[in-house]
Amino acid sequence: MNRDPKSSGAVALAAGGIASASALAACCALPFLLVSLGLGAGWLMPVAAVTQPYTTMLTVLSVLALAGSVILVVRAGRTCEPGSLCARPAFRRSIIVAAIVGALLLVASKIYA
Image 1 (tube, rainbow, N blue to C red):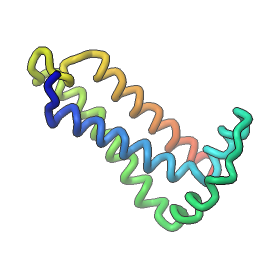
Image 2: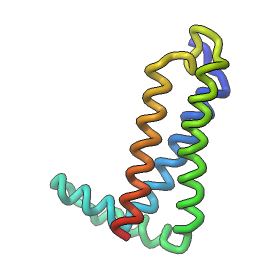
Image 3: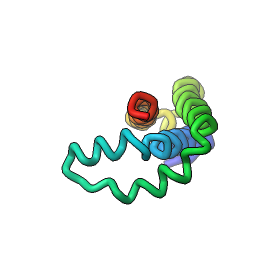
């Protein structure tokens, strides 16, 4: 399996977008979701306290990273070599699903904030 910069860049951008959206959702949306699933959410309070001053920056970072991952995967689908990781439909779908999960977390963080 060939690892090319397009696939690793898309993974990094999607992971960064999900991480920043999760940090934004730590104050309100994630505790609500975890409690509704029957899990404790008290451990998220320090994360929420640290990320509170940086909400605007994290929002912009999350939007740019998630959009960048989708754009990179869509553009790479046309230029990847056959047999490489970025040419596989399952890889492209998984990055798009990850970006959708990150976008849902981002929207939830804005709704429940």
